[in-house]
Length: 259
Image 1 (cartoon, helix red, strand yellow):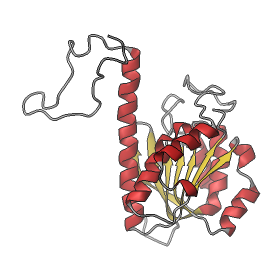
Image 2 (cartoon, one colour):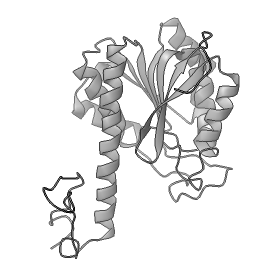
Image 3 (cartoon, rainbow, N blue to C red):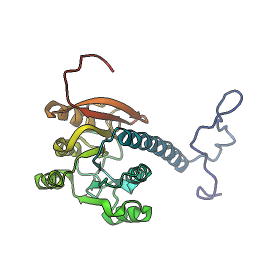
């Protein structure tokens, strides 16, 4: 039986009414386990964790009346973008606009060492046409999705930033999924004037590709950003093992302490 024909092991953990209290696959269940099964297993678990984040965050944004748009930097396969569209619709956010920033040519060259095999030029490519096809097939708020094509050092211009500000656009939720330090630096610079108190920033690759060290890669860019931003950022949620979210706020003289 081929990989495509056989039924894969489900990713969701199921409770069991006896020891070991959860259903575990045994040797017989996994006797034909292959690399393709591992990939699907990991992707199922990872996308479930990401979707849980979007469910919780859109509920929070709606409940706290945080208005603004959804901005995603790194839109491969439109997976998380479709999650955002679905949850915005569930919460009747009919005035939200959605911005997809991507080279649509994969990752650029990088000068910072990384251990990830994914961090090579051209990988993770989804063309603009394929991205928009996913959005059209999804069918939610399609008329309010705008793509901004190009590597961020070129596409995130002052003119684009000004046009968004002139249109009254602010950020409710930003997903920063651009993998590399060089890519993340212009993203944070671009976001600074568009952020408001209550903006949620999701760093998708905080623990990816740099020996799990968050002070490198996208984490380094975020630390540098905090040195010049007028906002402070409160740690919010962990997303799987790889990501973390932060909420922007301005110091109002609140007492020092740990929350």
